[in-house]
Image (cartoon, rainbow, N blue to C red; front, side, top):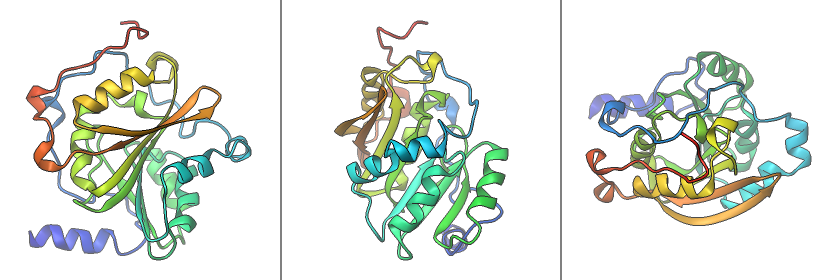
Length: 239
C-alpha cells in the first residue's frame, strides 16, 4: 500500500517527462476471450490534420457532450499525437489533470516533448490490454479513433473500470465502419462494452460517419469476471 501511495504522489504531482505506468498491472490479457473480429493496425498517431479537426469542431463537440469541466481528471487513452491532450489541459485548468496514455514508444516520446510546460499533464505508458491508471482517479476517459486497434478490448475495459471515479464517463469516438477499415460499427461497440459491464448513457453523431458513444463504467463489485465474458460479432463485420 505504501508503495502505491508513493507511486501516485510522484506520478500525479506534475508533468511526467519519463513516461511510465501510474498503477500496478491489472488482470493479464490471457484471462480474457479474444474479440471475434479483425483488429486494425496502429498506422498513425492522429486521425486527420489538426486544422481539419478544429474546423469541424471535433474537440468542442466531444468536450461538451461529455460535460468535461474545470477541475476534473481526464484520461486520453491512446493519446497519439496529443491533439486532445493540449486542448483538454486548459479546459480542466490548473485544478484538473490530463493523463495522456499510450503504448507506442515513439508516440510517448513525442507526447513528452509536446506537453513540456503543461503542468497539469502526465504522460502514462500503458499496455495494450491495461491503461495502468491509478484507482479511482479519473472523472472522464476518452478513446478517440483507436478502439478498433485494441487487440484485447475486454481486458482494457476491465482494467480501465477501477480507475474511474463514481459517476465517471467513458467516451469512445470512432467511425461507423468495419475494423479492417479503421472503424467500429455502433452495434458491435455496444455489444463489447455491455459484455464488459458498461452501460451506454449517450450517443452523438459527429459528422463524416463519426460518432461519440458515452458509457458508464461498472462498479468493481459488478464487473463481469473475465471467464464469463463472451465475444461479440457484428453482422457487418467480415471474419
